[in-house]
Image (tube, rainbow, N blue to C red; front, side, top):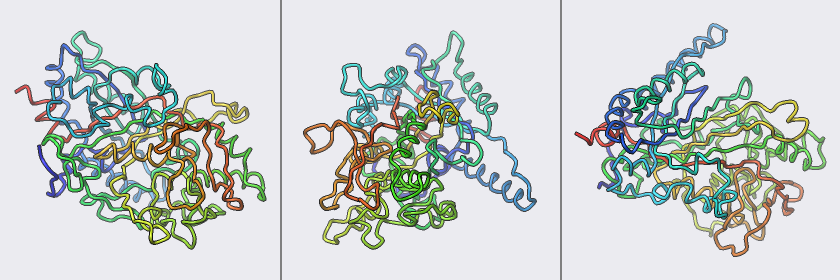
Length: 495
């Protein structure tokens, strides 16, 4: 067992998706079990995969190539080429560690050890209180031992890379050491919707900057110790097994988005006093906390500013402390999605000053993932009803799930009284990911979600959130080991 390590980060030892993010247009999540009769074979074959795992160093090199290609294209006034590249990462569940015989030394995270299915009630997932468990697809109610994460610039590249990985473990043969549980493919949205999730809002703006990796953080970007994301590093206060160093926990969620229904809701409840389309757009922006361009409503509360949204030097530089921002909701509702999940000055610089200052650093996560499913069809848009599955393959990295993903979901998004210090006003639920479930300190479970402050002219009025537009259909907690641990512990322990 070891305490936190303060030596410089070794980017060759950290899997590439964690700190840097695998470059991708297409991404496959391949969930598998390890054959109980061929565990030794799996570990032997894993030694052949380890040299192919994409490291942070490799991702940094790939990103530099992409940047160079874009710069050359801009100077020559032509479209940048789509560079062929692929990435491979691997992660394991607690059940996977048990199957491999690596569970004698506990990794020190209760949520990971329990698994997401056991914690579905804590997360508030629909159906989780029933005897049959949450309303998930069957695959995520079965045992899952591990996951391959395969990324690339095209379906052809990703499919070829996945086929190579499967061949290493003899998938499809009688002596296969792994068996497929579920395979999900995600894709970046096309054209001008690139970077936007399916509701249409620019995503991935407010990532934390990790000390020792992010050397030039943008204004407003919170800087966190490496141990917030990587196990065994400075800032990780839990004593870990030595093999856990430089690994990270993944919170994976299979999230379906009811886009036509969401669009119908903001149309039907458009903020009055404006033309219908503008009132609808304003309501959507106040539910999320950003306009679709990415511009935060805290900086531009009544009108979108696409230039602001596209500017990384400005679009994250705010803290809910303009004028009376922390006691009134005329700029940003207290329960807006991005305020719920990253409350900034609501906790770190609260008003009145007598309220305690609370650091949010230990609760920060690095969000990855990718969209899945087709664009909304004309039929769906006309009917206001979802007919084709689409949503987000959500993946978040952290060193402590209880402080990270689970805390954000239960204590913030699902907590109608959060953020605190707001006087007589109850903020309400996060309208995007907040779920009705057991609330801390609440003895009677509510039957519907509400949110205050959606109308800047009537801030104390609650809006009934008549549907759950983000629906979880599965998920699991994984551990992404370091390259050294993959080689010496996960693959090499058999001698």
